[in-house]
Length: 148
Image (cartoon, rainbow, N blue to C red; front, side, top):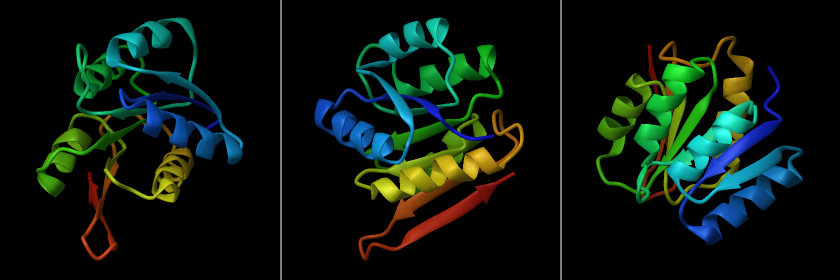
């Protein structure tokens, strides 16, 4: 599956614009939502190949968005972004709940592109079949953990 249409959800307008511009230069069509409530509305109106969502947002958080997607569109890939502490334990929890990857802010936009590419290579990427977390250490190394 080729990831073409992406819904990008983050309450930080600067990060949202930066990631949208980056993904669009890579050939993706990106629609944005400024919060989880807006994302849920857009998910009901438009078809997407993947959703990239922040975890911590006002009103409706990323976990609620993920749970909604797993109930209504179980094969839709979801990549979570978070600035929350908790490291790999938090990422493992998000992946166990159905995210395909969890990226820790700040991250290199190439890590997001790679997570989306990985998801596109896995048949029936949604649900809890397989997930990966990427954690950038203070030295800049990316750690990946697979959860089956």
